[in-house]
Length: 478
Image 1: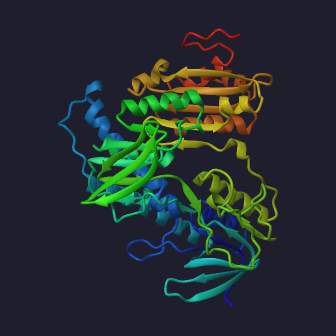
Image 2: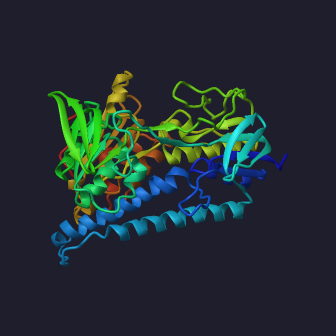
Image 3: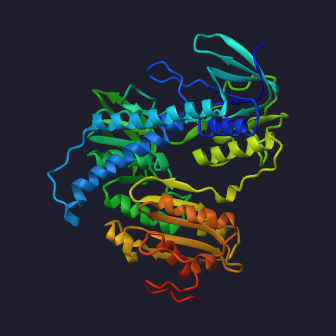
């Protein structure tokens, strides 16, 4: 039997490493198990997010966006340059350097906070034991008073498009293309599909997105989704809704995709195909038979509002439990669980978790859509404001998009905020803070915003809730 810990965390992704650091800060003897190995055979922390997800994709989104700005928009603001060229190898080198800096930072934080890093695959074998199998196959059992499962998720694969070398890939493979595919297919018009599709569209691919659902971004407010679809279409993304993929065939370095839509059976040929149809919890093999931790039919671990499983002193957080599969949601759950284990009272407001799509412009939202509220029988009032009427957005040459606030018609309490704009992911924090403190639309309307900033669009949307926006003509309120 090896060392005994107060807390053992399985998984060093955004949920696990944050939980481990917080637990150690609370004075608990903490270990964190990680099985991820990089191309050099070295154990790395950060999980999907830092290694093949959030961080590397944002590096490519940013560099591809800068390329398009230089190519298509510098001249509009008076900057004349020779036609820029995209150096894919250099972009990948930059992406990898960003990954390495973040991963190294987590290892340093473990050391600084006294977290013991255990290398290998962790498995819960009882309510107080974790077996860690290292990369050579040697198993060691550690004991702990508390166990936190933060095993994350993996991409969903579908039978019609089995992964094939580097032709049919998941989001991970899409971050490793060494050249721009001439014809790129993307299955799934969700967050990941739109982000990766937009990266390679900017760099020169003809991109077609096949989405089985008939509606576009149903989780986003209808007005914002409609505006986003219009802007992405303007950029050249061909988004086919109601297109259900039925099969594929690989031949001569091409992928023939078969799908059905309202017009019947269709076919398209691509040089590369990215499968982005969602993610599933990585829980298989993480919990030994007989431990008693309950899972649902899809592999999600059942937990209560404070992430306790049905087995005492065993917790689960992040992508392997209910709720949105978001890194920041996992991190906040990690903090909550660590605080609870340390004897403190803690809870999380699941109604105020922001979501962001890092296309250009970005799409961000928090709380209810107008459609959600009406479906629940809540009478609402809304205020919207276009960035085309915002001075700073015009000065930035980025005046596309709009901001929208949904408020309770009776109490004026903010129920949701939705934005499509440059830096929407930064602006949405105002909505998160407002909802966390139970703010009314009037609270934002009465606040003083710096001028000129794009944040003023939020101010104007709040004013527009009562028909009092200053820098646009207001709708007549009934």
